[in-house]
Image (cartoon, rainbow, N blue to C red; front, side):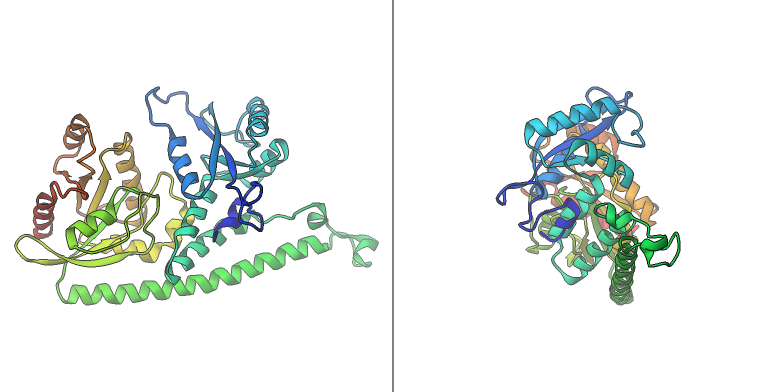
Length: 384
């Protein structure tokens, strides 16, 4: 498992499992007191991420709390309940639906007696498993190292001990002991590796920019498929272009961009690019590392935003994707919403989405329903 170091895997690839069994985890989250009773449960998405990473979820704990405790994320009373839940369910892993500081991780691990990771670590692990090309692996590794660097700490007291006086060979008080020297060596190694990876990613960005410049020279407009992960972007690419791109019912099945040619109903050619999907609170390390890939969206003439209309939190997913587009500098791009999975979406849900997003096109990448309407909408948008 390429990203297993993030989840603290053993040599056999498990994180707290026995005999190669999948790691067993308890999910952890906070729920603001102001959240509506019928609001979508954010731990549902976290469980899907865990399942994609090969983790078996055996329990959940949610605390009504507006802000995390700075020391233990949960309140002190809830930490005791979490400890009992972990022990009762035989879990070796706790996954928090939020970013944890190194101190919070350390304090929770000491009190709960299980490995603790946060949402960012889990997403990075999923990305590491799905990276196939050398480009994708380099971008994921860069994101992993950016996450790992500030979290390096000694394993055991000997690594954090400061040498001094006679124990330091007479060198004087305050001289670094062997543990701190080893940590500095590891930090230097990580920084050197990150420099090399950044150079590779920059070369990729330059190559993609040359390709886009050639396309613009040929006056071929570009359309970038974007959207929440597992919204059906790859399936829609196949339907619009006749391509045979891998389609999986899994989060982050597509990491490497795929470019295919398509035509509008009047025969005008354009390129259609399938890009990485987004989620709530996409880690900044990934946004930075995947800059070369996300530039396909930034430089596109039209953003074709694919929405899973059947998702209970479809509008929240639209907001999350638009937040990432804002972050990467594509907020002012022309946008066309494709309300995908019309074949399995309740009619009243689809009517509500169409009312909320005028101009959106209901479509089904599976049955082909609405595809010609979508082609016509793309043609009108490119003409503008």
